[in-house]
Amino acid sequence: MRDPKKESIGRKKLELDTPCLLVDLDLLDENLQKMQAWVKAAGKALRPHAKTHKCTTLAKMQVANGAIGVCAAKVSEAEALAEAGLSGVLITGPVAGREKVNRLVSLLGRAPFLMAVVDHPATIGLLESRLAEKNRQLDVLLDLDVGHRRTGVAPGKALDLAAKILGLKHLRLRGIQAYAGHVQHIPRYEDRKAASREALRKAAAVFKQLQALTETCTVFSASGTGTARIDLSIAELTELQAGSYTLMDAEYLAIESMDGSDAADYHPALTMLTTVVSGPHGRQVTVDAGLKALYRDGGRPRVLTPEYGQLQYEWFGDEYGKLSAANRATPLPEAGMVLELVVSHCDPTVNLFDSLHITRAGKVVDVWPIDLRGRCQ
Image (cartoon, rainbow, N blue to C red):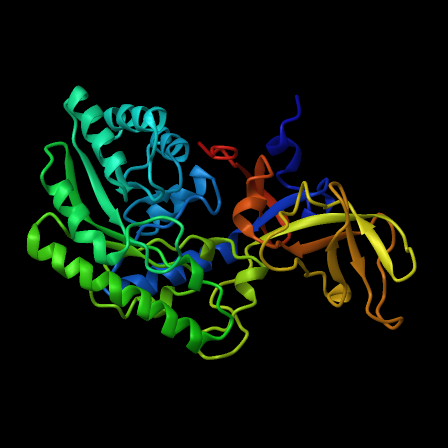
């Protein structure tokens, strides 16, 4: 069996087999330090989302840099994080159905530091029943829908649901979650700022009402990479859930930063290597990174290799991609050449691979397993 770590460490990155994912360790560290410094200066906490990188090694690095814990989207991710020894895990997606609730309650026995979100009376009732059977208590956040319409209870109905939780013995209301995912990629900074502040204004009003009802309500968890610096000015907000700032992708690199420029707050630490396998075919060549390597969602992948930065990537089937030149003055790479890309959307692209090749100064220094890969239950 191949040992990617043994095969890769010490090699120049352009010598690696492709397609493969790289993480520049210096850029990653700069991203981590920058976010942590901004959060600390604002008097907030950081509980970053592990669904971005799906790597317990990177999650531990975030905690070592000052994060109070990590977020997980699903119970299966939380199980892996707990098994790796990480504490302060928040499951940000509602846990519904008998099987999932049973897994959550079982995990709580091994990870009593766990928190989860709730947004529906039926799930709350099932959780209370299962927790009572095991004589366990679970800390929960009330998930608010602040405009995304994906999960959460409407702010106007939040107090009624909170009252139900407060009347139970085995659920403890710790606060609220209010993730405005629909505003994270608004291109213009001022538009994104206005939308995020309006969303969190509604959530802050609910948070203050809940704080008046119970002293256990101390957590207001929200925000993402696109609005992190905006949301730090919200007085009531206690912690940020941003995740993509670690690795970055073409979608986030396409939005304006706080100063109105197109220079992103964070570096593209994550890149992909791909090899030209055929061409030229007219003004295009074929590369070996297609739908099975680059998730078709978010921004368009960018070519980082300087002399070919004007080429445009397009998906060209399951196995292949296409790099096209806009005019005859733009050079095309030869077959066998290895190019470096910024990926379209980091979260689902990472989930397509088994490992991250960690580089420094163009050489592989480590290989980290993507050990949360495929954990979507």
